[in-house]
Length: 264
Ligand SMILES: [Zn+2]
Ligand SMILES: [Zn+2]
Image (cartoon, rainbow, N blue to C red; front, side, top):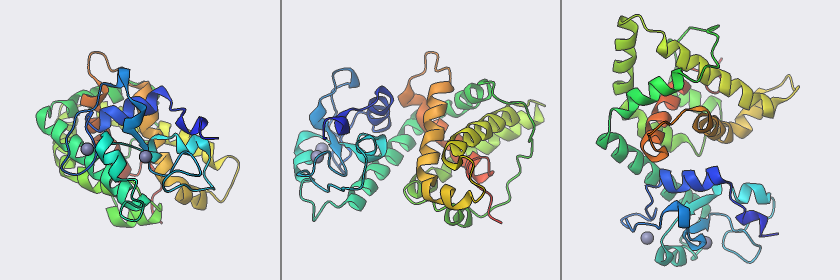
């Protein structure tokens, strides 16, 4: 035990550094981390500890979950030490810290290169899973109702924080519609396809799928993102540059009920 809880997948390491902008996630600290190629293990902090004698250890967690992106936060050495105070830095506090930092970096990166939204649209539409069965891309939802219905908790902040970019994205979609392009439809169909694959792995043969979706909605959302990261042809664009735009497209797809379930 413990060893496997530090057995991070290459994708987890890549995401951890890219989505935090290679910065310490502690509020107000923007200390740069070493690059991910010579990543120091001491910068990778477990939100719920790797070992029973570690901070915030939870027994009913698998080592795979302990080593997962969702359970890790990037911190400089000073702040790693500071967060060892488990009364001040609870699991909820650290998750909030990580989410807020990720949203801040995503907004900053998109602000610097807004053209990434267009790049993301092109790249997702080109994945080629789509067979355009379901072209209904209309929006009929209330976001809070939808988050509640699906039991989304951890991803709530990210989904809400990126809301400011939906407007920009929808302007791009409108342009595509006017130009008679099917890129938006292909993109949404590809995302739907990925969602059905991912959720299918959880649901299996079960008929009563909604409780399963509710229990795993945060993980499902993140796994759809992971699949996208692996399916998209990045070309000469970096994960760091493109990820925030991919997130925005995903959240919009969530609002269009292509990811997770439509409230009934
Ligand atoms: Zn730690
Ligand atoms: Zn720091």
